[in-house]
Length: 206
Image (tube, rainbow, N blue to C red; front, side, top):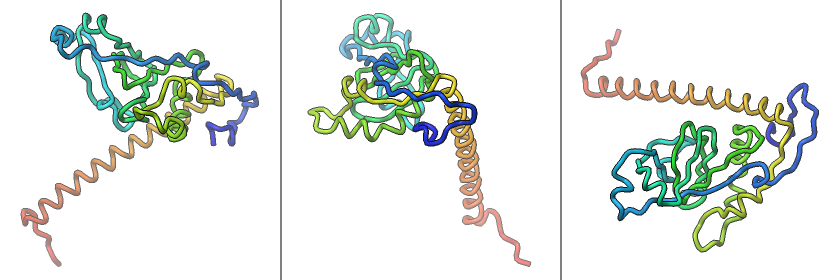
């Protein structure tokens, strides 16, 4: 409701503008250095990621490429604060970049020009199923740059974008905290079950 103006935050009355993603953001894909050139992968100069390293809105790992490998391929750099969307293979995975990574051809970097990163990110998450539907029927399953750039966004004034993004970020932080708590309780239960079900701990009956 916040991202579609069904609910407005107190104090904000400005008009929301319909814009194309390609007008609000710069978008580009990356590439992979040749695997046959060992020197492109020998040095750990630049962190490089592919779609397999994005899961649950997080970057879970990375490989390394050399500076020469980067310069002799179409790999591009996603900077801290950029949005990375997987547009081929594991289509639809999305994450906000926390540091600089080189990316491969299965990913599209989305760099907001003058808009809230978090607002754009959450809007895309909400629209991802619709975006994928528009890409059905392609020879290679994926989201084309033309389709992505043509996605319509409704953007409020920047100050309202930031206020909405702040609320959503706090909600994400609370979810992360509760998830960690749940994992801890599940781990405690597993340990307790192992003790009880093997007789290492005996239950005293009054």
